[in-house]
Amino acid sequence: MRILVTGGAGFIGSHLCDYFIARGDEVIAIDNFITGSPDNIAHLQNHPRFHFIRQDVTEHLRVEGYLDAVLHFASPASPKSYITYPIQTLKVGALGTHKACGLARAKGARFLLASTSEVYGDPLVHPQKEDYWGNVNPIGPRGVYDEAKRFAEAMTLAYHRAHNVETRIVRIFNTYGPRNQLDDGRVVPNFIGQALRGEPLTIHGDGSQTRSFTYVSDEVEGIARLLASDERMPVNIGNPNEMTIKTFAEKINELTGNKAGVIHLPRPVDDPNVRCPDITKARAILGWEPKIGLDEGMTKTIAYFAQKMKHK
Image (tube, rainbow, N blue to C red):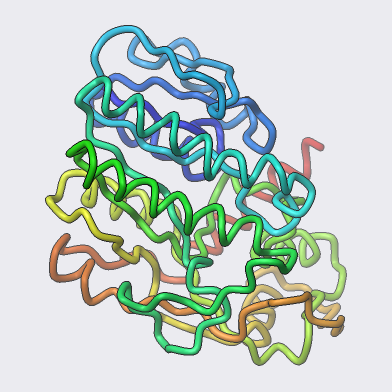
């Protein structure tokens, strides 16, 4: 296949590029490096089946030749980055999705949108199923990301309904692994960075809020299976093993041997109280569920961050 990945130098985007190259496909990655990193794709730059275009995907996308699939993964994705780049986040969800859908239509390609569990907001239904419409504050600080992704889902299905584009929508839950940015503000890199520096881990609130964590190779496998499936409505790809932030902090301190403990800070505005996917649909339609346990995945991720910090 000949596959285009927007946000191809980002965390999940770069792992998707690796996956498709390893499978034998030709990959074109597009990124403007606003939050992605050249380091994430440096190992692919001389590969004969890998091509890179440096561009903002909110501008007209011109790609020579045919495409079998367009995967739209371009977007700031952590609270720190989308609060720093609120307008860019809204633009890539709206204009970027429009341009990427238009390219898929022009090429007769399948289109896959990277959506997010954040479309559920601070959910009133738990665990979250795909038919839940969410509880989102559109004017809060997180609204720029939440509403950009909700709009992107609407745009994607509009292209399916109006132009018969083959569309797929993945709702990605907390994903971690090598190539997470150490300073991106999310809980996994925050905790690991603090632990490796021998600092207390900063828990926002009392730590009773819950999250579930998916290792990146599991996430990528689920996305690839969704791309190959016939399912056009959203599918959750995440890990249903839920834990409190307090328990997660204790696990990171245990795995790193950090003796500094934890400290508590105020909760951010609109921070979700719970986050856990119902993956019944992914199991039934894709035959997918996560395989990498937390200890195994976190040990690999800690080793990656330790190496990065050594060479900083």
